[in-house]
Length: 111
Length: 111
DNA sequence: TTATTATATTGCAATATTACGATAAATAAA
DNA sequence: TTTATTTATCGTAATATTGCAATATAATAA
Image 1 (cartoon, protein in one colour):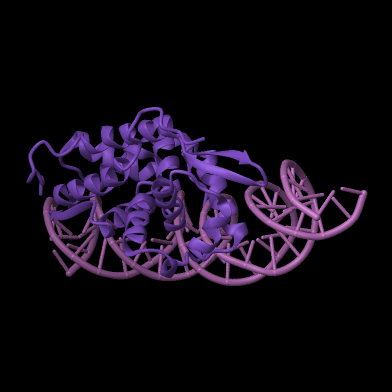
Image 2 (tube, chains in turn blue, red, purple, cyan; image 1 turned 135 degrees about the vertical axis):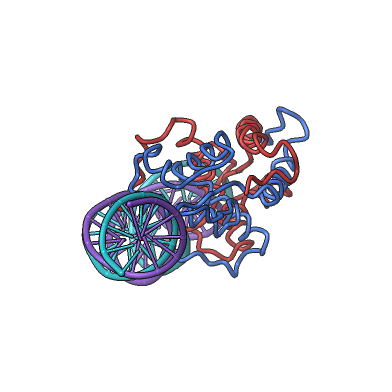
C-alpha cells in the first residue's frame, strides 16, 4: 500500500516521525551542515557543493522549509537560507525527550 | 529515479540519515515507546497494541533490529525484544553532536 | 509424532520518495 | 525594454516504503 496509517498513532508520534524523516536523507543533512558552517547561504552554492541537480536541491530545500527547519529570505536575485533557531531548539528538545527516557543505567539491557 | 546518491555524501551523513530514517515512521516510534514503558516485550503484544497486521509489525521490528536500535532474544515460543542500551546512547550522542552545533545564542537567525 | 503458538518471510499492490530535464517566475543588469 | 541570473515548479522515470494475506519456520505442548 505504501500509505502510513497515521490514525493509529498519536499526534506526537506522527509529528516526531515527520521531523525524523526530514533528517533521513543525506542531502538534507549536507545542506544543514553547509548552513551550519556558512552562517548564511545562497542556494546556488549548494548545487556546486553537493553535486545534485538544481531542481533536486530546490526540492530538498522545500522539505526543510516545510518542516520549518530552515527559513529563506529573498536577497536580490538569490535567496538566503538559514536555520530556524527556534525550531532547531524545539526539535532538539523533542529528540532529547525521547532519548532521555532510556537508559537509567548504562548497561540496562533487559535481555 | 528514487535512488539516493550516497556517494555524494560523507559516511557520517549517510549513517546519520540511515538512523534518522528508522525513527521516521510512527509505528516504529510506537514500538520504541512501548518497549520503553514495558521494559520487556513480546511481539504479539504489539499486534494488539498498534493495530497493524502481524507481518507489518514484524517488518518494522526487523528495521529496528537491522539498525541495532533493538535486540531480540528467543524466549520459548515468543521473542523478547528490548532496546539496545549501547546503541541508544550512541545514537543520542550522534544526534546531539548535530543539534549542539547551533545556535550559540537563542535568537541567532542570520536572516 | 502431531498439533499449537509465535514470529519471520514471501509476494504483491498501492503509495511515496528521489532525481532530473524542461520550463516558469522573479529580479537585476544592460 | 531585453537579457542574464537565480530559484521554483512541473512532468516523468526509477526506486523505496508501507501494509497485508498467505505461507514458512521454529519452538513448545499434547
